Image 1 (cartoon, rainbow, N blue to C red):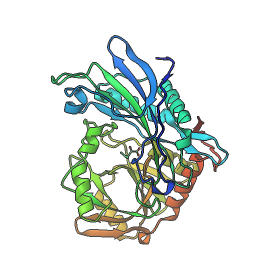
Image 2 (image 1 turned 60 degrees about the vertical axis):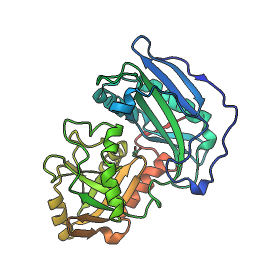
Image 3 (image 1 turned 180 degrees about the horizontal axis):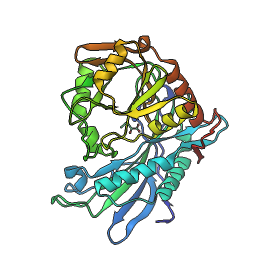
Image 4 (image 1 turned 30 degrees about the horizontal axis):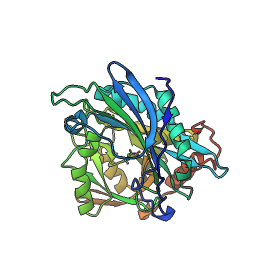
Length: 355
Ligand code: COI
């Protein structure tokens, strides 16, 4: 790779959305990044082009066998005008781990970070700057071979699109309601659960719909073999404050290794809090809750940031966590993380990168 990125100017720019109405992933900027892969040329022809539909053969691998990986990260506008990215190298590292599992050729991580920075710099007027807002960056790779035989594609497209966003859930710090899904599973060890790939999300939709019909925000997934151990929540990793310790399910091959998860563990340890990455049975968790030891529950993710959980349901047991309110630790993590991301707080761990 190491090639220069060409720029193709749009004839017309879009009207920006009202900053109060952003929601999540509803609006897209004027430009996108695009690069192709062939066996002969490898990754080639990197360019920034006007955002718009792409043309693909109806037989393309992505449509039939779901050969795809994606990432999610954000750009923030600091008060002093700087544009900051949060640990973009971590996302690119994970993208390559996903590529390896999905049999997609690896990317040059540094080059793709450079492409992200260039695209964000072009689109900097789209970065919203109210509290809780950012420019969401979605890089993804799709198999584009026109062939119906089940085999890895020989051609791919890497695209990066940008979306100005507010909070993923309606109100960023109002606690969400989740329930333990005991019929469907998200992923199994040996499968693609640890990879950020569309199939994992497709597999989650039925249960997500069920959860909404039952009046919940998201589902808490159990392991796919014994249906006993907690894995993750719809679009987040999950943490439990048990007395003075924090527990989170250990990465086991079927859980997504979240960049926010990794950052939260590092912050908690930095503050001297004991973090245990372990196998957590749902039965044990509810026992801890019965004994009043479950103090807080929160989800973590790029989109979700830190999302406190106020209600938890499993079969006919219901727990109201932290009185249905945002716990102190969840609030401190949210403030610290968003403080670092937006340049308000000292970045002691060296996580931000300027565009
Ligand atoms: C993210 O947090 O970036 C995600 O990818 C979660 C979801 C929106 C799919």
